[in-house]
Image (tube, rainbow, N blue to C red; front, side, top):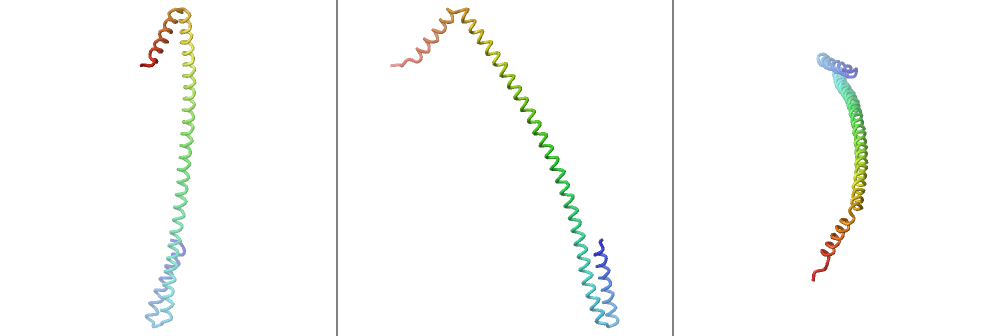
Length: 145
């Protein structure tokens, strides 16, 4: 209860007492002052309750804003963590890709050298095989009439 609520309740009670005393004594002016004090006290009490509620809402708003700030900070930190993790994974994939490409190039070079060496060692067989392949391609691509 704040000061306005207290003063409003006190003034309202004072007005009720004035109205009652005015009614007992037959003093209409006191009864009117009592009614005015009752209404004014009620209004002041309502103002105090409204102000109290507004202060509560302000405190709630501050609490909510603080919670939002904390949660946003957590989400930002999580996002940074995910970005760092994705960057690390991408770097690992790039390194793995480079290693795979190096290995494939090395294997291709080795197989190519073996093929050239085999062709040099077995020229006759290689030429006959090449001629057979050329003949087969020519035979398959001829026009059929």
